[in-house]
Image 1 (cartoon, rainbow, N blue to C red):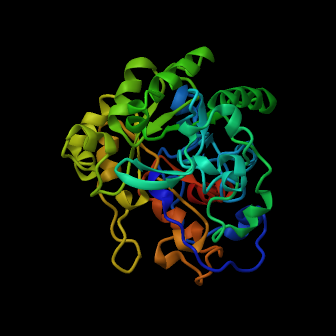
Image 2: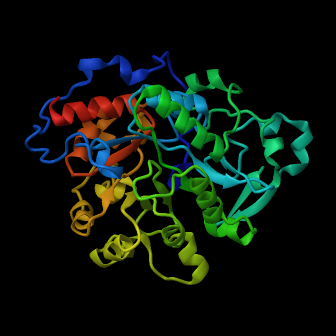
Image 3: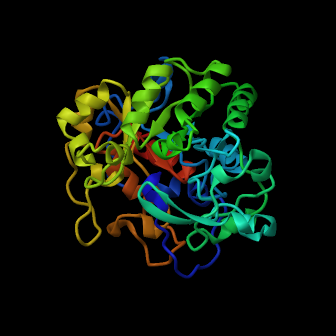
Length: 390
């Protein structure tokens, strides 16, 4: 997600099981969980079509299983499925110089690939203004697909995930078309539908470069017959006007991502729209979103704000207000490591140490959210079973 850029650099600590919370099993259960009756209708999908076929709360593998493998690689996507993710966020879509869509967290790839070690690309390093922010590095739109395919993915936050660096250099950058083929192959192999949840990154920026992301996504979805209301592809963006554009050209489920309350979506900045995210999460703003989207992807802080000491405060009305107008909520992002957890759920200060993430899940699930993005799908699946009393 957009606001996940912040790293937490500090010293790494001792050994951690590769599958982390998957090893916790029943030992990860927490006390005082709401019963299935208290959870109301929050049970597994009941055979409906489209989004209604998914378990609730839905566990969304954030960039795959990025808690355990370098993000946006087929290694990460495959592991997310193995760990029980209901949907895989494959991937964050950015275009190449020759118009292909590839899966990277950002168009700047210095932190997620080995591009810096390729002397032939040293001259491509540059500084650009991306959504009003000066960024220095290497950008996908300056590379052809063939050139990007010579690079390999690396761990984005090694201070928090030193064990993931074991897999640096193993996987190449996937294209969105390859992801669509992977989705079909895994669906056949597993005997059940595999869902994906791609995000269009910086659409205003790329549209100004003549690399229209919405049309490119729509063309590929139509090519593979995945552009209908019940298609297993949920599209998301931080720019509401991008979702509005998609609403006019495909019938897929659509989700508006929402950053911190005081921020403005960049398309609003570009068009002079003075509204902030705080305006979008009002009943009026949510009604407007419900006119062209099926859901919202807010930060967890929009669901439960943090107090000045980093602990959780009281939940907002966002869940109730969104549900009132028919929107689902898939907030982001749950991670196992201490620095990413609310203060009361941390255990020690080790940057790669795990805190009481099950307690955090329980608290967020109790607000009535419909699902959550997580870097650790196995932890999310166990937390959901605890919550539902399974």
